[in-house]
Length: 424
Image 1 (cartoon, rainbow, N blue to C red):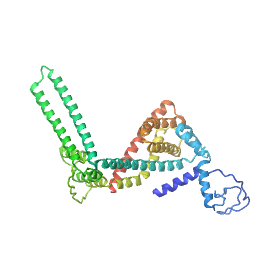
Image 2 (tube, one colour):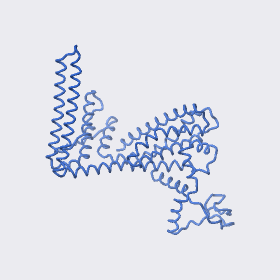
Image 3 (cartoon, helix red, strand yellow):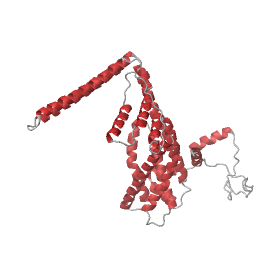
């Protein structure tokens, strides 16, 4: 299915970036090589096949590719600005039959979806690569005694700062409570002393971790192996987690998972023995799938992306039906018209989100903040200009379609995550 999508998108790109033909028609009266009809132009009026000679030299093909990239036929330049800034005009053109001047909407949708998937994979791989680079740099620092001393001193400074702030807050709270003439002074002092002991215990544990880090010559190696170790521990915790039981038991396992996720590698410990278990029944497939996903997140991402584009296509009829619902009283619009508008809306969303995923890190957050406002505004402009709704009507319909679209996306995403777990 992925290959079919890429082939369809490539065909879409070919149509978008096809250069204008400059040479005159010189085959008047010759038969079409496909159906035999007498030719009257470059395209057969009976079957539509191009009458040009498709045999090319390698240099000619390379030149056509370069020329096609920089000499567009004008449709893309007309379609994209309208899609981004005047979506109502574009929707009205499509619904009223002015399609030839624009890129076909479903072709745009396929290309936008493919670009979105590529951008999402790029973003995930970039984050993983950045994390691996940081771990390598830190491991190189921890491999030397001087580096371990610097890191240990940082931990000591952080622990001391946290202790001082906590003690100051406790002292301030006790002083405030003691001002109450009706307060239990003995109870207040007892609670204060107990909290101070807890803070001092946390401080002592942090100082012990710093000392263990400073005296551990294998800290760098353990840091590089930390991810795999944490995955195994987390997977084993998930496998032993009860699906039913008291809230205290479930909470204890959740806390254990959190401790594993935030664990620091300071001392050399033996590898935990992972017990291999067999699970049967509907109650255990989720745990086993989640455990396998924690052990091998790369494969889980491959499975998820393998099905993502299939579920993305389901958004088309969902948004189309939501548009049909809010415009049920306008009989001049058919399901086909609503699907055309839905392809434009999804193409806009896929393209803008793909841009945000490939932007440099400092620009990513501002871009998605802009998108949080731009996307519903784009939907409002589409309904206002394409369907001719009033300001109030377009605003109300925008809220309805927006809510249904977000709900459908969240539902499909949840189903995708669960289904990917079942395939592990």
